[in-house]
Length: 453
Image (cartoon, rainbow, N blue to C red; front, side):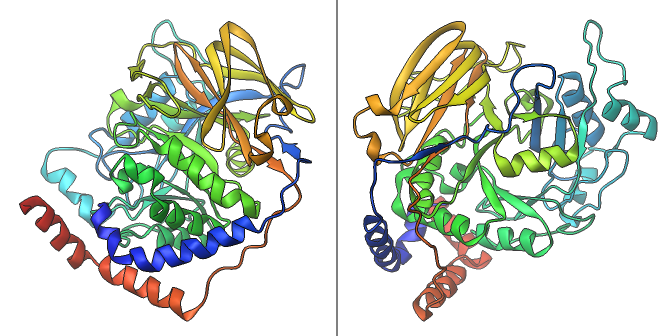
């Protein structure tokens, strides 16, 4: 989405932002806080220790616009050792892998260009979910791959890529969901009204510029969606190779600084968004769970007991690294936390397969620990200047196998403000104007104009 496009609303949004900033400034400040540990319930060690399961909740097949069949895609994830998978084809709601989902008519073109649709047989499906289906030579697994049904990349038939992945949808609900241009809010509402929940997909692809992740207009746009809809659990901070979304970590930090004054956490997800087999090992999440079940996957999506991982991370002058590096398909061990402990002012993280751990607060690196493979990193907020201003702290674990981002540890000062949705006449007029300039005719005209100019 172009910066020029949103300029038509700059006056209205500037006024609303000034109003919101004045509210933030009124929040009482205190040095007393409780560090909220998103991993508090995880059992890291001992007989009942939880396991980290690798998974992706946003992946495609020839039932929408991918180049490989559902069967081929599922088997590739299985062969790479994934623990769970959610097929989220564009405007197609995922079902069990031994069934054909209801397909959006737009994607019938796949037949015309020679692609086929194929799902697993009943026998193959049982073998995959039980972990008994034969692995490639030299590889073994003793766990199944959980099938996550009900996922759908909503707004899938739009030009502006305002995509939202809906989860928990019944079969056929959302099939053919063309969506609205720039319609994140409407897609989130659609999922909620149909008994589901959602995650904002690759927001940087919609913003379309690196500078946009720091633009107050875009930050406010997503902030209001998260504050208005608790069912929108978070956003993708890593997506596939991150080529179109290299700065979504920065956007995440900016949004957290706007939502946390209201006590609203925004989780950071990572998904492969694979359309080809060579993108399966690009970005994924590691869910800490006592057992690999669909119910536990859903619960983990809600409570934040997971890490967002990417194999390809782009250079970033604010958060690092200094240079882009890509370790996809090299079968390198994933950098990961093996224990997390929280004190009054400290967070201690034991890690493996790591070179260093960096700690980020309010969008900036505030501490860093070098690690030689296995080690421990502790941040003591009482020793860090201006920590009384921090709203959260989060960790990023870097190693030869990529980067794993923790979920934020909120600093709860027991002073969260109450949020009230703006239902004023001015807000309604603003929304109607936004929808008018987001109509498909207007967007097509804009794209033609941009191509010509």
